[in-house]
Image (cartoon, rainbow, N blue to C red; front, side, top):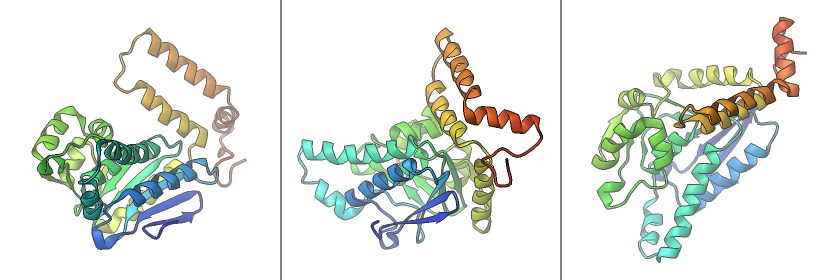
Length: 263
């Protein structure tokens, strides 16, 4: 793995760390490709139950690397399209993981860095975290990150922060939904560990199906098709090996087999 991206295993948890502190963890095409490949491999690894994404140094991620942006300035449309697809696929890979992903936001997350946070399932930040959708200030658009950021903060907040490109703090990020929790820096890792404890107590197949359920249900009308689809989903999971074991453990007042000390 590239030294710009570090990975550590802690039991069933993989900790992925952006490791370019000298450029505030800004990403270029190489780091984008490494992130996509790494998250794909973690999703395929049955020993991984959850992932934490963080960054070394004072910032979580400053967005695009300046040298990368200088190269992009001379790209043709086809080259720009290929380059942009790399970023879009990387974000989709994180978003579509079967395992839950927690963003550890200890510092600023600007532009594409905000997109990284939004692509994760849960984002825990500290008061040192700041956010900015800065693209408009340099005549660009937050296009590739927009599906994830819009989902996280809602259209109304996106209209403001996409258009003004202003910096907003961690309290505002919590208010509009970009952060799931805001804690003092000294409590950041303990809070994440507590969330991981809850996640690891859940069935891995259930978590994967729940993530797929959220994508299927969000922003859709509650019509006959949705009602039938949700009924099908619960019927399928009730009949699965994991579903049967989970219900049996509940009725028998014991831990399920996937929890340490279970059957």
